[in-house]
Length: 165
Image (cartoon, rainbow, N blue to C red):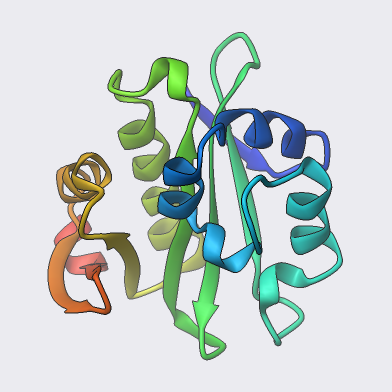
């Protein structure tokens, strides 16, 4: 059983440990975090002090996925687009590399979709994935995201609440 909880500063060290090479760093969203290698402090500062680069105060929600033994297994963020409470974007999705391919990413995103549509009441969720990240692309399609466009080597995807239901 997987569950989501809000990100805690102590999660940053765990997330950092998953980002062992520049390829993982860039696929995760490293261009928003400066240069590789990344540190737990850079991650935590981006979240706590910089509000995930969101200008609006109440617009950045980092989540941590934990398993039944309370082990941190995944992470992603939610943020509203242009402050629109009906349009949400998922990002910075990562799963512990030692358990990738076992469905944790899919389960984590399904929980995120459920929360976004049923609790937050959004109408649409978007996500982007690098064209060279086929594993993540397939995961996003598996949970219901549909390809919409390609912009600068990023496949833009979305899912509406009507597709989810």
